[in-house]
Image (cartoon, rainbow, N blue to C red; front, side, top):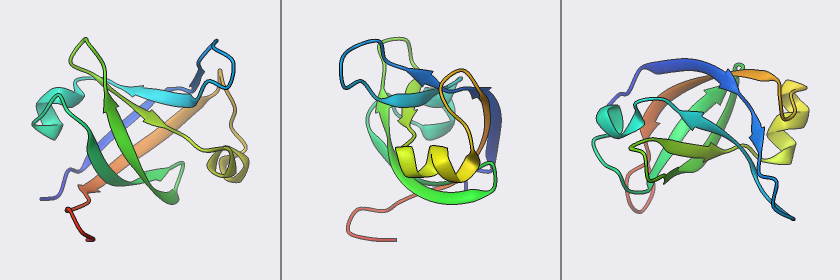
Length: 94
């Protein structure tokens, strides 16, 4: 299944000690087809990465953005990031 979903949103850092930096994916429960965890293959500002989207209570998901990817994109919390969701990663590989 190809997602072909693109959005631009702000990077957000959790205020908790050791908290993650992530983006919140608008309307994600609808286009991912679940309110649960989904592993996805994505592009962030054109840089490929793989991550797991984490469900929130409000039918949206948050997608953690690791420090290495923030460095590659030169983005940090508070900056806009464009994410292109390519496809879910199947259990056990591609």
